[in-house]
Image 1 (cartoon, rainbow, N blue to C red):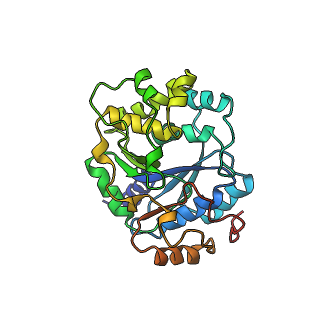
Image 2 (tube, helix red, strand yellow; image 1 turned 30 degrees about the vertical axis):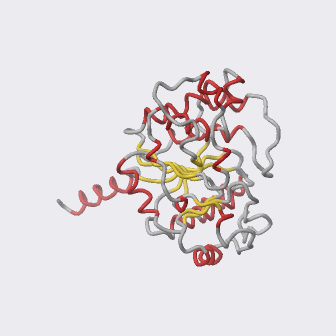
Image 3 (cartoon, rainbow, N blue to C red; image 1 turned 90 degrees about the vertical axis):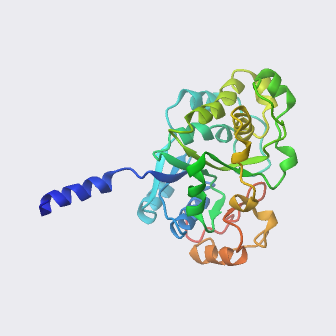
Length: 293
C-alpha cells in the first residue's frame, strides 16, 4: 500500500463511528454536571465519547463545550413522535428537586435508541465515573446491564394495577428488581426487543392516565416492567458500587471545586465506588461552577 492510499485508509478509520460510548441529557441547569461527567469519563481507565441530548442548553454553553470538550457531542432531541407527545402532555406537579422537569424523565429509552453507539450506556448527568469504566462495559458482553437502586429501594415497585393493565405472561416478583434507571447498558442490536419493551409502558401511559399513575418513578418503572417482561432480573448488578447514591459515601453534603482537582478529591474520598450518583439530593455544583457557564 502506497503512502497516499495508507493516508486515505487512516482517514476512513478516523471517520468510522465509535462502537462504544455513553449518552446523557441536560438543560442549562445540568450542564455543569455534563462537564464533570465528561471529564470523569475522559480521565477514567476507558475514555470514551459522550453524547449529550440538549433539552435546553444555552448558546453560550454549547459554544463553550465546542471549545473545551472535544469528545462531547451535543445533539438535539430526536424528532420522534413519542417524544413530541410526551413534551406536549400537560405537566405534572413540580418535582422536589430544583431545576428538574417531568417530561425529560420519560424519554430515556427513546434517547438510548437514538444513540450513535451500538454498545451504549445511559448515564444520568448528575453522575461521576470514578473508576472501572472498562469493567462496566465488559459486563455488557453477556447481556443488558441494569443497576441497583440504593437510596430508596422500598419505593421502586410499580403499583399492582400496572400489571392488570399491562399483564406479563410469566411468573415474577413485582418488587424485583429494585433498580435505578440512572445507569443502564445496551447493545442496540442484541437488546432491541428489551428496549422496545422499555418504551411500551411509556407509550401506553401517554394514552391512558391510569397506566401513567401506576408506573413508579417515570421511565424507571417502565424499565422495571421491561426487565420483568423478559426475565432479566439477573442482569441487575449485585453491588451498589456501579451506581452508588452519594448519601452512602463521605462525599455527601461536602463541597468540592467543580473541576478536575475536585474530581480527584472525590475519587480519593470514595475509593470503593465506580459510579457515584447525586440522585434524590441537591446537585454538588450549585453556585460552584469553576468557570463553567
